[in-house]
Image (cartoon, rainbow, N blue to C red; front, side, top):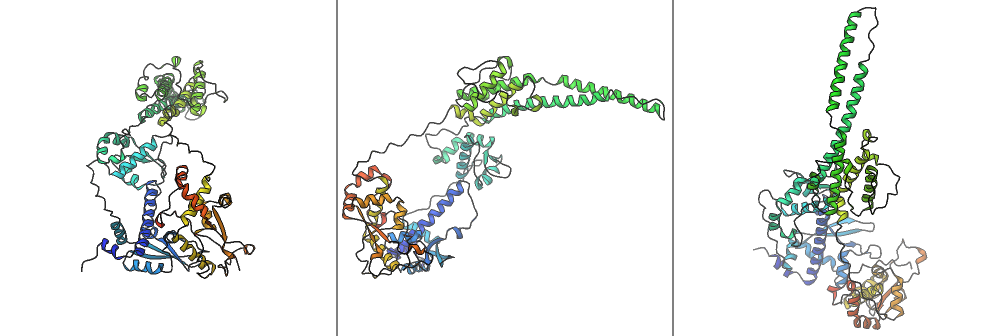
Length: 594
């Protein structure tokens, strides 16, 4: 006998079983989507699917006053299908291999859990006309798959921003597909993990294969977004860093050579051996050889000092290139070409005025150091409020007291300002997003937003299905006969009201205008709510309120629904039945003693 198809299995289920299976499937897919989003954001864990797919279904024993309803139970209650037959319905789905069971212990009993099977997902998807997407084609050799390209684009965007790296804890895509690529397209920001940066090979890969990726994955490249070209090239930072290291090498080399020269010069003035004693002739010959060797060492060291490039031109090239890079950032031109044009002909006596990028921490310090280095003031800038003096932490100690220290400090300050395109971002800020249109003013005869939110929730609860579910809950929790609660209207208990709003003024506004009324359920004849042993004895006589709509409230909600929809579009749906009811948190009513 052939196996039934998913469509046939769905048709064999009754409407109640179909609703239960659909609600479990929706919860399962919500968890799967959340885990995918967390993993895409760098928050990945290796919890088995058999664990995270388990969904709380119902508690045994049923103690709604102590253990709140689960999300599944809340959906079933809103649809009017949550009753004593829940266990039988779940058993049928389990027998058909559409769900599996699990459990976890609680303080008051056992929480029964369910999980969708592969067949169960196929059945629900078939009922909704879902078709499996076509399998992605393997990209040509040398190109990445869609997810790797998407992550590489996110990485390039993060590295081009002010932070300069992608703040993800761990990403399997980056680790397996980008870092282990040949050549590596990404690298770890810290040696022991925590953040990623794009490499020069990664930036070049995006630029070289942009057209191919647009053709393969057009959804990753909207038509209005240009190719991912770096606004501030990394080559500009590399050139400035090389000029700075050149100055460091020169000053530390001179320091080392002078230390060696002092040591060798000390050896040339050593005292000769005293006359007399044993081996005087040998000691005299050894002293003569030591003196000759020391003089040779002094000559070699002095020759190397004379051959050492002077520090002045190196500092001049460094500061001139840094000023050119700052000007390129302010003007939006190519910084690499600007730096390369200043390599020859740099002069400390003719430094250009620092460009303005519009940031105090960059412009004021640059103007201060420029004035100290050249004696010229820059126009249109206020002096720094900090005490005058060079930023000595930016200059190596051997050069801190040299005549080039101030120019060196200016170059180091500008290098840090333009690094990673920071000065460019300050000079060319992104346009601010358009502000949302202002909400129209509220007429005086309409409720404010908080009061209307409560009115809408009461209107959603004022249906036969919700009223029947409420009466069943009140009868069970208050130990009442069904005939006593037969005339109770649909409404919200205190826990559901709190889930909508914690404002007591909203309730007062509705009741004062006659749009809602309150019934104390403890006043019903024979009401004996479940006694919570952990409740405060002082609250034994606390009322059990039920808030419900009046005829005036129903009329107000119906007459002004369109006006409320325009005034509060976020919570003004027109209730059309159980399927469109807003989900209100389950009742968390703690009954008093007695």
